[in-house]
Image (cartoon, rainbow, N blue to C red; front, side, top):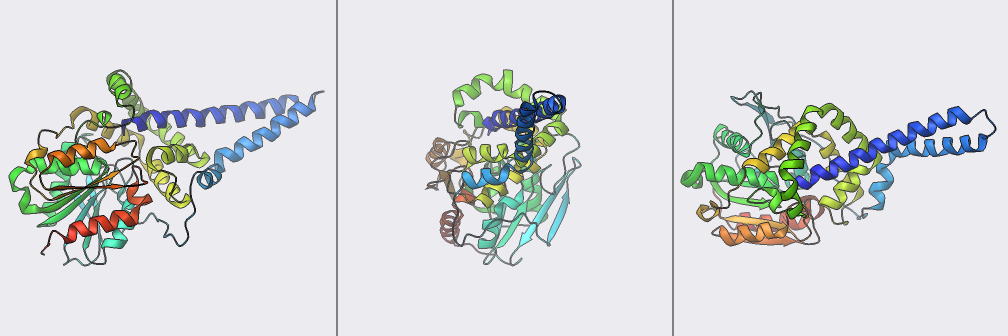
Length: 377
C-alpha cells in the first residue's frame, strides 16, 4: 500500500510531463507555421494532436492492451443501494451504510480497501445477497461517507466506526469481511473489543490484508522502510496540502491511462477484463488525495496487531493472492500461523484485487467457509 504513494506520484508526474510537452508543441507550431520551416511546424501540430488525444482518451487503448477479454463476464458497475442509512459519529463524520438481501437473514458486513469505496464489492453483494443480509459501509472520507472534523484517519478511529455500525444495527453473530485496510480495521476492532467480540462476531474473512505496518509486507519492503520517514511521510503531507492539485492530476492520469497502467501492475495479474481494470482505476481516481494520504499515515504510524493475533479466538478465513504486490503472501502465512482456528486459501493467478479478478473463486471459497460456521440468526 505505501508503494502506491510512489507509483501515484510517478504517474502524475508523467501526466504533467505530457501536458507540458503538448503545450510546447502547440507553441512551436504557432511560432513556425508561417515561416520557411512549415514542415517542422506541421510535425509539431500532428504530434500535439496525438498528445491531446492521448491525454483525454488514452485509457481506452491502455485498458484493452493490458487486459483480457472474457466471454459472458458480468462487468462491474459502480452503484450504491437504494436502501441505506447514514450513521452520524461524534467526530462529525457520517458513515454510509448500504443494505442488500433479506434483512432477516444472517448478516455479512463488508469493509472495503483504501483508495476505493464500498462499490468495490460488486461481485460479492450480487453473490451473497441471495442468501444473506449484505451490509456495506464506506470508510470515512470515501464513497458517501464524510470526513471527520478532527481529521483522524487512524485504524483505531475506523475500528470505532465499525463498532458503532455493529451496535447501531444491533448485529449479533455477524460475519465480518475486510479487504486490505478493511481487514486491518476488522483486526483492530477485534483486538479493541477483546474477549466480548465473540458475542458480536461469528467469523471473519481477511482478504489481501496484513497484521502490521504495510511497509513491512509490501514489495520493496526494505526500500520502503528506509524512506518511510524521510520521504513517504513528507509526500503524504504535501499531498494533503495540495489535495485539489493532486486530485485533478489523478483524474487526468485516469483519462490518459497512466493510472490504469499502475493499477494493472500493482493490483492485477493480467487476467482482468478492460472493464474491471477501468472500474478499480476509477474508484482510485475518486478517492480524495488528502483522505488517501491521512489513511496511509494512520497505517504506517500506528498499526500493528501482531502480538494480539494469538488471542483472536474467532473462526477466520484468510484469502491470499499469489502475486499480491501490495500485501505479499508472507503476511497471510504469518496470520495463518498465529491466529487460532484460521484457514488459508490462496487465489492464483491473482493480485491485490483478487476479489474482482478472481471473484468466482473468492465467492465460492468464502461461501464454503461461512456455511461451515453453522450460522444462526
